Length: 219
Image (tube, rainbow, N blue to C red; front, side):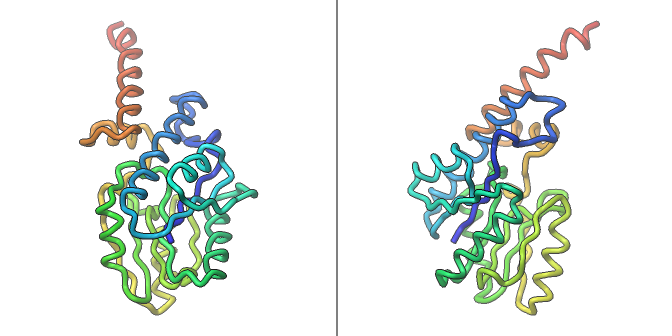
């Protein structure tokens, strides 16, 4: 099962708070999640659940016929996935692929590569671009090792995977590697080929910033 953890999006992207107001950050988070969920729907290769209590995320899940595993606590992605993993284990589901809602460039082919490369028993890890975070994690069986998300999650995840004594495949997938936390990330999203909703919004935001800076630079 593919699990997409989504915290309350009204508080999304705090690192961009010095640049954009709350409404803009929420709109960006909505656009990115919409792109991710649309891609997962296009893949269609596995069951999908959004782990969330966010209204926008739940509406997206309903739109695509995906399950909602309610995360009433809304504490962290780590807590949400720990809870959801227990749920799927109780159902006898054999694997989980966890992906975040802020990797908007992901394509269905990227998801298929992860499943194709996954060992019969073991894991697949896809690091973020700086190789500090983890932007996709497949575990088979579903609770093979705990997932602990954060800025420096990749090395601990790799260590946990190796400690499980089962094969771990590390994949470098550029589209998955880009998560959006900084203005530099937003620029990369805007300049990447494509016409996804989040890219169109990113281009508008960058253009507006450049326009507002012109008088200052000219002075």
